[in-house]
Image (cartoon, rainbow, N blue to C red; front, side):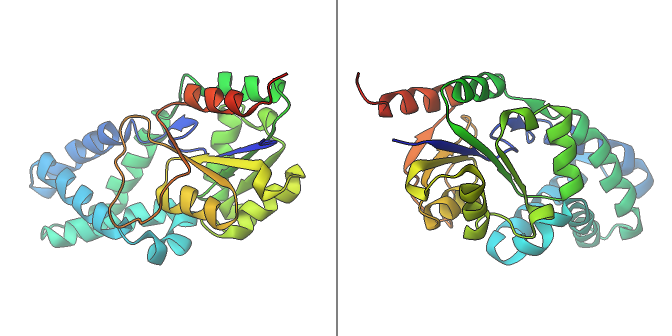
Length: 242
């Protein structure tokens, strides 16, 4: 029976990706006239370069994840160069995107309810998130998440990120449970599922109805859920019958 549940933050508790399209649309619409291109083509070029850049997360992740804003600037430069456009405009485009994207981050409706229920049921909870320390701590503060967790592990502050097993081992030590007593919930097959399983945890992949399994990531989750209500049901099923 699990005694602890660990959570990823972005696209698990927070809808971080839901506003990406609108943010890039605004940034590209504003930049296109000065570049002499159509904004849809610029947006598509940035999307193309971004997918190619992050495809091999094992290679680029450890360096670029704690430097997300720098990585976006790098991708925009790649896109402008590939399209024969002025790469000097990349900084303004990336900055405009960053400003728009952060305002569109929202809590998933089931996030706080789930955390409240699990704490009331006595589970030890940890938040394990990749990304820059300042950026991720701002999200934690903005949405009042710290009060729900016994441990917070942020890649940029800890010095390592998922799938590194040291991240999960730190969370286990902080919550006082064994790996076999912990579940980890996240949306990233490579970082969350692969990392948790490598550290001996039960790995739960949450897809939110919008993710598909990437063929190049060869991992099989221990459990697949669409939303956190399914997680609560699964945990209830693990409780001993009185």
